[in-house]
Image 1 (cartoon, rainbow, N blue to C red):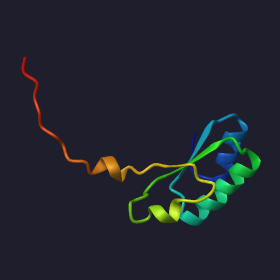
Image 2: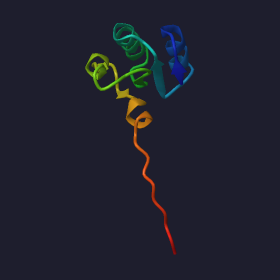
Image 3: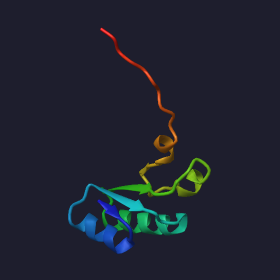
Image 4: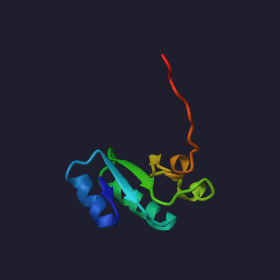
Length: 86
């Protein structure tokens, strides 16, 4: 479940979500929210997403964050022009 606040994340975890995606949090907010989710629901996976780049990645990694999603990996991928002829 994609969440943009700590309250939404706790509600989603309490409702049975397997994974809580914390979207567009600052690193400090992310770590506080991830810790709160893990304390109340230790089996829920916590995913960080939203504006994370290779340069900022280290500040989003932490003991309560299980997965980090980075759209920058696919947004800037070059296209490959190919054809299959039979």
